[in-house]
Image (tube, rainbow, N blue to C red; front, side):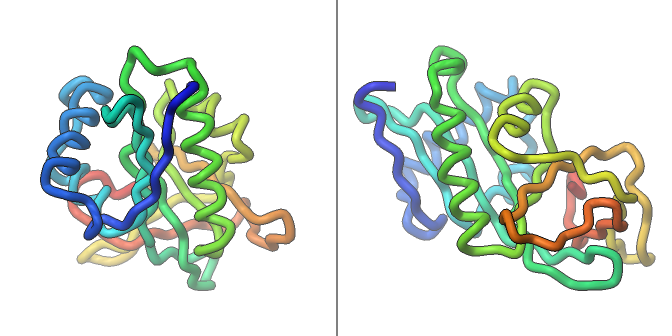
Length: 178
C-alpha cells in the first residue's frame, strides 16, 4: 500500500476521464455484472478513490438514501460501487477505503447501510458493520413491499440508538432496490 494516495471528492468534481477509469475499474471488479442502474446508484455522492502511480486502483461511493426504521425517518449513507482491482486486493486498500467510508457515515449521516457481496462481507464485518436483523422492505409505486431475499449491513455511531431489530424500509429506485 506504500505510495497509495486516497482522495475524496463529490461526483461533480470527477473529470470525464476519471469517470471512464472508474467505469473500467467497476466492470473488471464486478466481472461485467455492473449494470447501468448500478452505475447510476453510485453517482451523486462522495467518492473515495485509491490511486497508485496515477492509476485508479480502488473506489467506494457513499450516497444519501431516505429510509425508515420502524416508522421513524432517517438520512442514511449508502455504500455503493465498492471495489479494488484484483491485483491490489488483500493489500489493505479495501480496509483503508472502509476507514474513509466509516468517517463519512459518522460525520454526515444518521447511520450507514450497504448490501454486502459474499466476498466483501468479512471486510465490512471487521470494519464495524453488523447485519440488520429486522424485516427489510422498500417503498414502491404500488406501496411498501417486503424484500426478504436481501441482506443489509449497518454501521452506527457508538452512541447510536438505532434498533437493528426494527423493520427497515428504503426509498424506491430502478434496478437493485438495495
